[in-house]
Length: 498
Image (cartoon, rainbow, N blue to C red; front, side, top):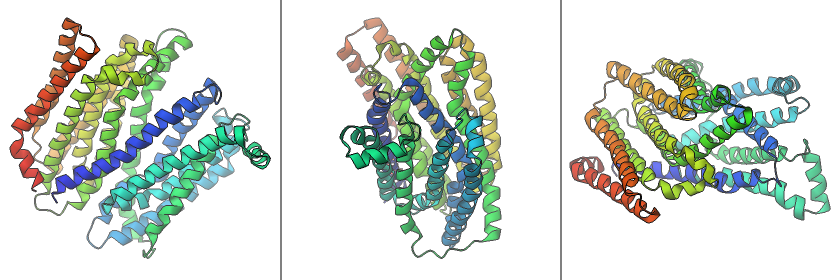
């Protein structure tokens, strides 16, 4: 089978696990949590706040060790030693992080305005610890090209979580026996039910980790100190990258809160509008995430091929072709997709969607370009690029938000990923040149933007009904796809047979 076809197939599996998980979350859990019968606005805000802290803590505990495992585990004869060393390191580092946090959970809770609620900190630490220990077995599935099991377990995690949330917050309170109700009351430490979100997360994470223990079967556990030092030098800059990634993703919401004019209620309304429209760009985000799951082990598994650099260039062009097509298609059918937002007053923010879609495409391009510092062990450059991008995010957001409201966050996202792409390409040409077809990449991205602009203008002039607007969008999408097929027949024949 062509390695490009294999990459595409694995992207589909990783995409299914990501998409199904997001669908279950947004279609089931979000409406459920936001129901007045379940959580108040303040209680749901607490859930969101605690999950934000969890995302930051996860970067520290995981040490981005899965990428480091790809780097050294892909070396011939080095798989088992890398798997064992990375697993033992994460076990020890997780204990060194988790135990002090558990011991001082009362003080930590107080510093986060959660006085008397240290149980939240303890549950979060347990959840993150299980997720961290599962990182290397999950990475093994990716490196060994087993996307089906990876996808199955990721979806199973979501289903277990969903089942227990509904059990704790709906079934037991309404239909539970006296014994179940007594246990329910004992577990409801905060009295509001918010704690059950984290009980459910803990059960799901623990069960998935236990199921992954089978990945250690037949592996002789040993710790290679010299290998560990190499792995640590490789991975520490990636921790910086992870923190910057969290900042680039979450900073917009915080900056909107403090940089917008008006009272707190009006600012939160604008934040709500932006947040709702961000979800319309989630399809591109999921595609980019799924592609990254597949392409990272793909880099390392093919590093010893004679034509590996051309292979990386081909995969980058393929990503851009698919991403640009998705951009045109999503924008063409936005009049239908927007019904995901139930409140029509929020449609005023639809203008940010193309900027966010384009930003996610750029992020995927960066994932392709990142091959050079991962294969050459120059991950310190990843940290430099990440810090530079975070500075750009902050500067653009601070300047643009007071002038353009929530559009400033979208502009900052585009600027951030554009800087990441530019810097990675610049240094990549110096240390690990890859023959990317910049002319075609730029042409197709530009054509996607121009076709969308033309479609918007035509719709504005004709002012058709919904069906007419969708037909114009369909024609635009078909034109773009047809043009790609006509121009790239030789390319597709080459990569499908490669």
